Image (cartoon, rainbow, N blue to C red; front, top):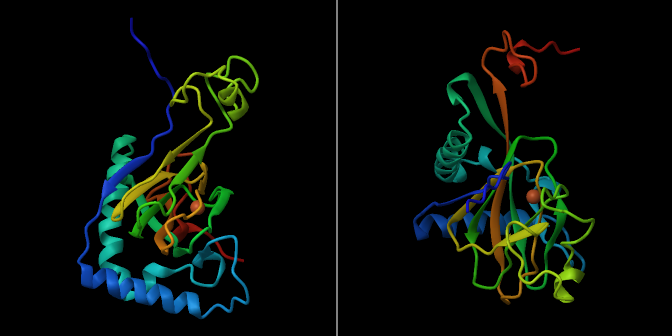
Length: 227
Ligand SMILES: [Fe+2]
C-alpha cells in the first residue's frame, strides 16, 4: 500500500541562535516599545507591535543581526518551494514584536497584504502557548464537518492527525522560527506559563526584478507610477 498526500501546506521550522547578551538588549527594546503604549487594564489579547505603531522593527539597528539571520531562513523556505529567488526582489514590508502575558492569546487572523510571514521566538518559556494553523479547505473532508472537534469528542474520529484535522498546533522552543504563507489563518494558544512570551513577526513581499513576460506576480515598484 502507498498513501499519497497531495497539495500540502508547507510550514518550515528552523533554529536561529543569538547571544544571550543580544537577547537581553532586544527584550529591553521591546519592553520600551510596549511601555510607550498606554494600557489601563489587563488585556485578554497579547500586545502586538504592528497595530501599536511599532511595525518597522527591522529598521531599528539593534535588530539588524537577527533580521539577517531570518533572511537566510526565508530564502531557504523559498528554495523548498523551488522558487527562483534570483528573479525576485524580497522585502520585509513590516516587522514587529508580540508580547504575551499570562493568560493572553492572539485570535485567528491572516496577513492578507503580504506573501510570506514568520514568527521567531525570542523569549518562550515552556507552556507559554503554541501557534495554531487552521485550514478552511479540508481536502479529506468526505462528509461535511466530519472532522470538527465534536466528532472527536464522540469518538467518531479516533485520533486527530494531519489528514483529518482542520488545525494543527506547534509549540516550539525559544530560538525557533516558523515560516508560512501569509494567507494561512493562524492564532496563538493562551500563555499558561506565568511568564511573558515574546515573538518577533514579519511580513515579506516578493516582486519580480523584471516583470517582462509575467502576468501574475507583482511588478517591481521601481516601475510604478505614483499619482
Ligand atoms: Fe499573525
